[in-house]
Length: 307
Ligand code: GYE
Image 1 (cartoon, helix red, strand yellow):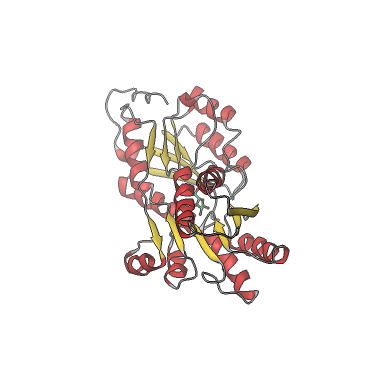
Image 2: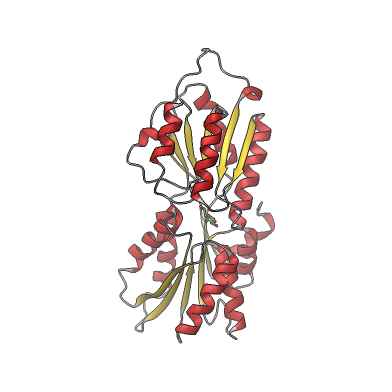
């Protein structure tokens, strides 16, 4: 990552003169809704003009939005890249136009890190590891094979790639922990339900579901109940996010373990924008802090959750 270009007047811009172009992934999950709200609320609070664009989970829409932000000469472009690959051309266009880019939430795989100022977001590999560690601990004494099915996030997205990798890395140390099926549910409830239905049809003996987000787990719970099974008992369920509906299901014992992923990135993003506009240097990687919840802990935390 590079140092942000200094404001050309040498004086710092007033908040009301700062325009931020933000290209959001979509509205696929409870996490995403909370993230959008956080960004909109904090831009307002900071006094910036926010140009917000929803890409409906399509990379081509994000590329279009970024190009339009470049044309409009916004001060800073921020975006949450739906997938990791394929950004070099448009990021180069922003760089050539002298507009700094901040990655929020999801990473890109561009080799040239000078194409963006910083990446603000979670450590998704670590999230996958936390899911794997809890499961390894639960089954540390097992003498039988444990059949795991996995609902992946959006294909090619950083959280899907990394949550899969971190989980696989940790469970590899116990040969009884076997992922027998793994498929994308695109981070949505509807797809989570549909794919879980197919998993249940194809596999007689599923012990564990690992879902890359709460929404897919919630969809899968519907499929599990429809099949006459008890989520959280007949099938152990692990998910990621810890949004309200997920925490609710956890507190009812339907989800056994949730790894938290914090969507409230708005305040930190606005601070980064300020620093970038002021020409101050910014850390190239800013990781959000997160915890985990068992059913018991979810029950306790639920009343005070903000999202
Ligand atoms: O976990 C999922 C959302 O990129 C961290 O995207 C985010 C993920 C989040 O759809 O619910």
